[in-house]
Amino acid sequence: MSDQPAQPKKPFLYVVVCASGIASDVHKLITAAQKQGWDLGVIATPLGLGFIDASAVEAQTGYPIRSAWRSPGDPRPLPPADAIAVAPATFNTINKWAAGISDTLAVGILCEAYGLGIPTAVLPYLNTAQAAHPAYRQSLDRLHEMGVLIGSYDPHRPKAGGGADRFHWEEALELLAPEVLGRA
Image (tube, rainbow, N blue to C red):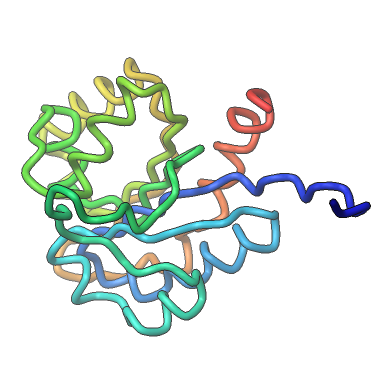
């Protein structure tokens, strides 16, 4: 028997990454989360996987990136989530999630999180033309009604990309901290 006190379990954060030009900066969120005492794993949408440096992300988190369902009987590669951050969240993922269209592992996890009561924050990243579509506003309203914490972002101009300097990765952690700490 050890005389050492047990180390407290770090909260585990799932970071859901979508197909977006700024997804390559997800290391900023990973670094900030680790500095705040989170353990984390990344779940990428199938297309989002092509926007990140998978080897670097896996080395930084210590876990494999998930982007597809596992086969029955395969071990779960990530511990259960204490919280989820969706960053960057695309127009497509936001609308599918709000509609309950669970056609990818990433959106499936988000749809289940509601029923499991897992605190979830979303940081949208899209352009003004997409943000003008009525489905987007309705989707944000539905997610808000579901208790999803929605970050702020001013959409960028269509066909221009950009806005990476205005995307505040740490906002997901700021939104989730009261939810996760309040449950401890």
